Image 1: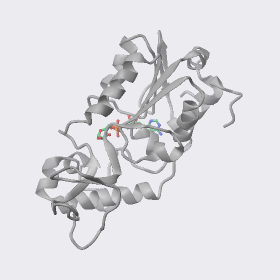
Image 2: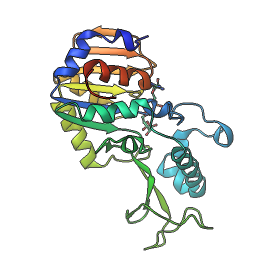
Image 3: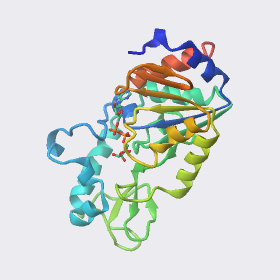
Image 4: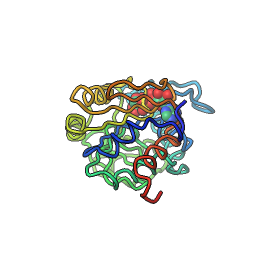
Length: 252
Ligand code: APR
């Protein structure tokens, strides 16, 4: 297990010297804020559903109310959660390196709340909804008797402004992520299982283009190879440790 005290010194040097750091985060980064990861078993009311059966256009067509209520529950979880030390360390890192790109698969908006200035949200954000017919995005809506609520403009059901399984990612977000992975000199992949494309390809692309790749996950073993550092551990511990080791003079 990697700890605060055994972050590889070569990694500390690589981070200190990096000109452009790109970071990809997944559900693991928000786990320590109390938000269950996508592939964790669900609990309580939702235990009998598989998220992969709720986060699809087909599920919404079949049972829009069920899907709406699942997102309403997740929204409530997110509203009651706070950014954890992992989110905060990334917001700090942004201010310490010459160039920084944060790419997230999370839809909880916690990076933004932690102070990251412009996270690229590949999978959208559950705090917004959009019209399922014409796509207009809304940040405020009425949770009235009819669920999902109807679009104020055209009456079609509103849906969460997220990317469901089988849907295309927003092309501008994907292009920015691709550019960052191609151009960065250090890429951090944190708390993601790497099972869902195209996000899963970004770390490989960065590494193939010559960047140092750092993986932080509870699911990997500690490994150091040429330009590849896998660190086994919690992002809420290892991210602050890594940032403090590379920039000891910066205030936490
Ligand atoms: N610190 C570091 N890693 C962690 C932590 C933690 N505290 N807790 C869990 N992890 C790791 C797990 O080991 C796992 O590899 O985070 C990963 C979470 O994986 P997933 O639940 O598959 O989440 P993610 O990779 O973000 O999923 C990608 O798939 O389901 C879709 O759209 C959804 O955005 C999601 C995407």
